[in-house]
Each structure stands twice: as C-alpha cells, then as structure tokens.
Image (cartoon, rainbow, N blue to C red; front, side, top):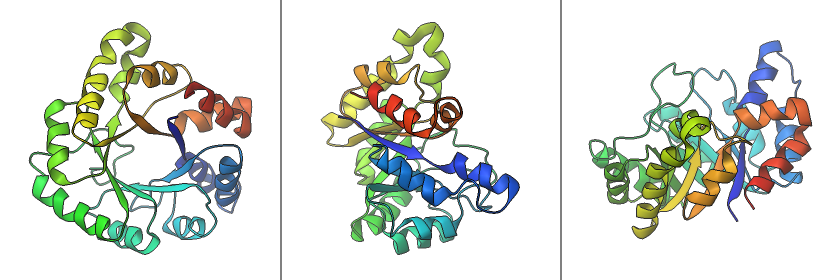
Length: 238
C-alpha cells in the first residue's frame, strides 16, 4: 500500500496568521498519525512563514510514524536542522528564495556533482534521501547518478490537466516511475494531489511508495473534519 504522508505546513500557516498557538500544530500532527496517516511532512522555509524550526524540533520526539523534512539543501540552516533531527527521510527541493510553493524539480544532470555530495552527507547519517524531479526520463536517469534513494515526482502538471485529459497527463509519470523502479530508485509523489485525482494516479503509476499531501487535505478538513479527511485520502490509496 502506498503510504500517506501529510504535509502540515498549511496548519502552521493558519496558526501564524493570528499568532499564539491556535491551531496547535503539534497536536494536529500527532492526531493525524492517530487518524491513520503513515507519515508527517514539513517544509520549513528560511522566513518561517509556516512551519518554524522550533516546530520541527518539537515534533521530533513526539512523532511515531515517518518524519519527512523537505527543503532546499543549499540553505546551510536547513542542512544543519536535518543533521540534528535525523528524520526518516529528507526530501531535497530546489526552491528559489521567497518562492511561494515548490514549482519545479532538480536538473539532475547539471546539478549532479552537488547532489551527489549532499546526498552522501545525509546518507552517511542514515537519513533516507529523496529528490524532487519533474517526470522527465533524462532527469530520472540523472537521479540515479546522484545516489539518491528515492525521487519525488512533481505532480502539478498532472493535477492541472487531470479534469480534461487525464489519460494523456498520466503518461510521463507512469513512464518516469517505471524507469525509476527499473533503476532501483524508490518513487514518491506530491503537489496538488487531491481526492479527485489521487486514485487514478495511484492506479497508473507503478511502484508508488509514498504521496505527500498537504494543501488539499487541510482544505478538505475544513468541510469534512481532520479525521475524516485523512481517512478519505487513505481510501484513495487502497
């Protein structure tokens, strides 16, 4: 079964909009685990506009499932945080400074030397590595050369085209995943996956180990409640 890792950034965004500790990000994370999710994802950014570095430190001793920390390893502070926390997985994302949300994967060919070094550092601390990539066969082949354990397929384009041409939109993701599996690389996915498009993606992408979902799930929780939202997403992955 494909694992569901819930990104709790948006819960922190709501808290930070008012100040104080409502909603309680730490309680939300532990509740999400209790409701059945198999992992918690956070993506701390330099401006700490949602998840803060304190949140990451506070979460570490309390989480019982897989902890996944996303971020740009070219930020020294991020690297130091990951090495301190030693999460189950680090997902490396090539965000630009001030970027609202992730919008592209690594160029694993041009960045190969850098990625090899930073991945080797994390793996030396027994942290599983995943790198954000577009569904491009050349980038998947390049990922193999970096030594990464997994790739995370950036699914925004699939989500954008799903309602009008899902059969066409899924093809590059299925091909990229198949190549990754053939190369011995694990496959994760994330970005704009939701209750409408997740089941189809899961059914057509081979070897899918994990999806990271935050914005859509937290938005759905406003209507269905947090526990129901987690359960609804888990059903799509069966």
